Image (cartoon, rainbow, N blue to C red; front, side, top):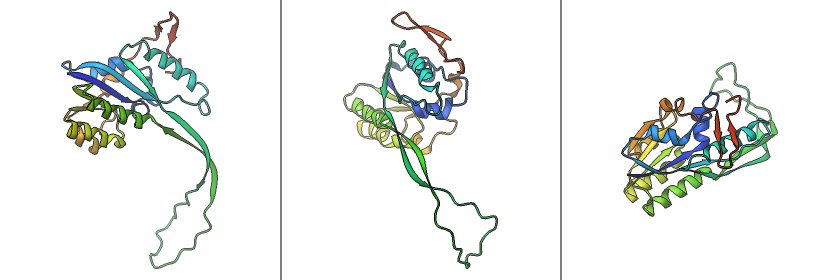
Length: 219
């Protein structure tokens, strides 16, 4: 069974890796550990976005080391989206009343208070994953697909692959309770949490150019 694995990198990070010491994750090892041995992995597509150093100054450097580590695995192909950061006006939430108002009483509230805030949005990663998944299915590039995500925006492309193209899909879930809408369109559901800890890169790797790649100290 030729299998292509599609990994929603941001969903994986925020659902399973953020705040842990397991960010140095070998996605090739994770894919093999999470999937049954009858599936032959042809490619692993990793969808991510280069982070900004505005909040964490070490973020870009740490991510660069990780992307270099992923590049040592021949099956992994990295696809980039982008972050858009803009200043926007946003309303502030009113205080929660300390009492339950009488439904017959008219409460007069002050004019809404707004503030100018930074708004960061990720663009492209989930769209790229969905487009590549559907394209590869119609081109018969795989016999089965595996999608690592808990993003319900990917439900429809998963449904198209399973119901309209007629190919099976394994949902690799980064959470203990995956969203029901994704489970409904998946052929199989497999949990990755038991394999995250064991599937870490070694602290030091050697890149193709002979240079060393070191695990970030706080990872």
